[in-house]
Image 1 (cartoon, rainbow, N blue to C red):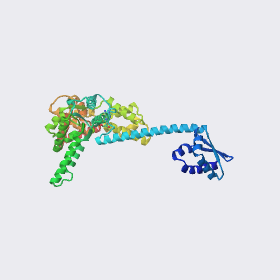
Image 2: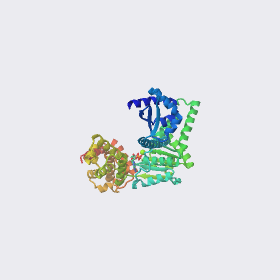
Image 3: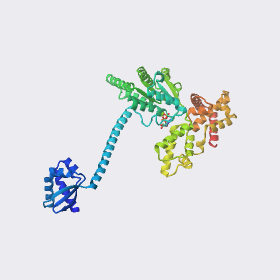
Image 4: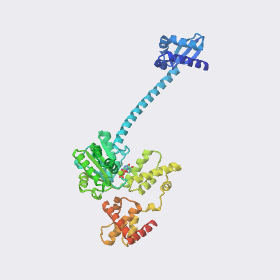
Length: 472
Ligand code: ADP
Ligand code: MG
């Protein structure tokens, strides 16, 4: 049989040159030599009608090739084989599916590339979307405003939309969700930029290659600056992240002011984020502050436990390869309560630890993975207690309204110590201290910090408090 197969392969070599390639691959290749008896070769075919077609069109060619290879006159017949026919059917179905899949993949790829290109032109990150943004009481207003802007239910009241709140609480996520939504659903032109990137872009265009301000170089610079301004003005939506960094940069303020004006006049949407209110951005010009405050100010506070758990659950669902008990979820969401970025970081660390060490995420393992120790257990409540005790006061005094010298001083020190030892956000410290505004807390902290550099006695007092609290 091996011999017959070999001979048939040689015949195919000849036929390949004689028969047009599509006919050859469609009708000749599927043939299987079965027997060679009495100078007659029987070929099996998956098809029922091959026999006649091939015989009529290429009978002579095939006979000639068979004779050449075997060295004797050989005739042939082609008969349909059931098994071959079934296999052929299956294969062709599979092929069709694969083709289909390939074309779908190709289509998806090209769509994705297109999207990627669009996204990279706008500097957006597609991972930040509304559908994976968890909404709770603390960010409801900001979320609602962001969605309103995206859906185009916009009037001047929302322009600019100014989202403010502490670090790691979802400002960038929400802002980019606006961008991604508008870009994909409305096909509008969006540009996202951080204030730092904007500044670098501005400096580069202002000073690139300009040593002496000769006439020609000056005009080059003008051209560059026109292009620079166009880039930010020629959009439907401009998103500027972390605008608090504009502080103290007069030239940038001026450019921003003009860009805002142009966009605002043209009815284009502007969205800004900041870690504080415009009024609390030091050194910002009055006119820019007024512009910022024109639209809608939406704050993002500190997420409640339920939202923190929901965010964790979402992460786990997305990864889908590790399961956490409720106890572990609660532990993580309680320890990392003021910053979602830190909560995500802790989750990632635990996942990495469990997979590297091949351990289940029990509470013990999780604590080990996070190097969780007594010092992490320090919280603002304990600090308030310790500060009150140190100054011979009640906790109620510290969180209360009294402005009496000693109480006010102890309160400010509590702010400083909490911030230093826990890194909690201004908002959260404000909440712990009887619902004070985060700008007040920031101001208190700065005041104490400044004083410690001059006042040795205060410095000593604070160090004593650090020691007491660290031993708690
Ligand atoms: P900010 O800009 O306020 O510092 P980010 O927007 O960068 O904070 O958020 C930090 C991380 O937390 C991001 O990975 C973000 O996706 C996630 N995050 C923040 N808020 C939410 C939320 N409400 N739902 C889901 N993920 C969130
Ligand atoms: Mg951010």
